[in-house]
Length: 264
Length: 174
Image (cartoon, rainbow over all chains, first blue to last red; front, side, top):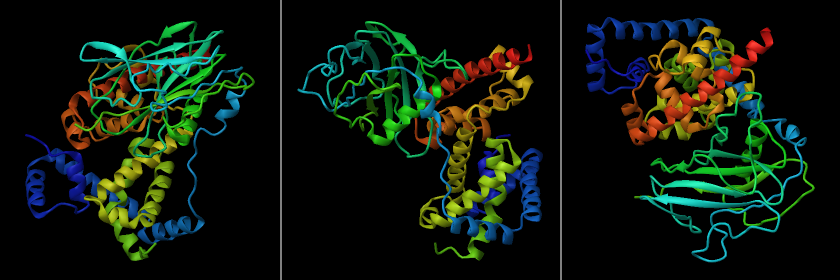
């Protein structure tokens, strides 16, 4: 017997089905003890909730909350403070657009002694540098090469959703394996290093922001995530300035890129 | 806000138990779930036009509840509560067992606050709603391959986090 989805039974429970759907679902439920049990369970939960928390109480509390105003969501509060303990960093910001001339490699912003990022594109078996502003396609693979400058660098590559604008946390792409709960969450690179793994553009049209966080000392997951969140808030891939600041006491986002497949 | 008390009460009568159930599944904490449920109805009042435009009010309330729950999961930060047997199983064996077993579901939902919104959405559809990959793909308008990749990432990271939490607990017990 093919069962309806749970969400269909939940729509039935909420009387959010049309006549044809209602007839189909009710006919199934009548013959299926499992689905009937699920639906009866929902109704029991409804009765229990209304006994413990009657509609009049809900209305009163919701109206009181609405009058008090919106409670801000708790973000990665306090995390930036922890980041302040991490040592000096060189900062270089560039996005996908700010390149000096069409066709140039994406490492055009490297400053003396500072880190630089180069994006290598793998498309249909061919490998080359990603050109400025070049649209991406589903199936493209991106690899990042980081040049550390004159001292070892600790880096972490994070991905954040740009749309929908929900307060979702950053996902760590590099170094994934070492990002446990308490361990450092950065990879030490020296000289010119290609980061492990690649970012494959999927067919989900919602854009994702890649953010490369770098510091002179190892940093943890929450520090990297908080910095990536700030970069998203500033506007991923739109920062066009580059600077080197050796006096900063924390890691920073050194590079961002919007990744989304072009419309077919 | 033009929603009257009667309209709000009616919305709650029809959908309140379902919203609470959703929150309970994700948060696994009765008190917090009840609190988030109230937040969801505050948002329903505030975004009355948005919910009216939605093709499904239940769908709108579920999306809103999920986002509110994910915010709560994030706010918990390092406070991860996982049932020891489930943690031990996933840390040692990964997701070799039936994918939607009670243990894997327990671990995935415990660490859900550490994933991005897309992975969270897929996780809820798979581990809370019990949808197979094909139906998740249809629901989200993605390819099955993309859904599979998100689930694979979710499982791999969840096992890393489970191992890490287990090592932390074992270190504390020594």
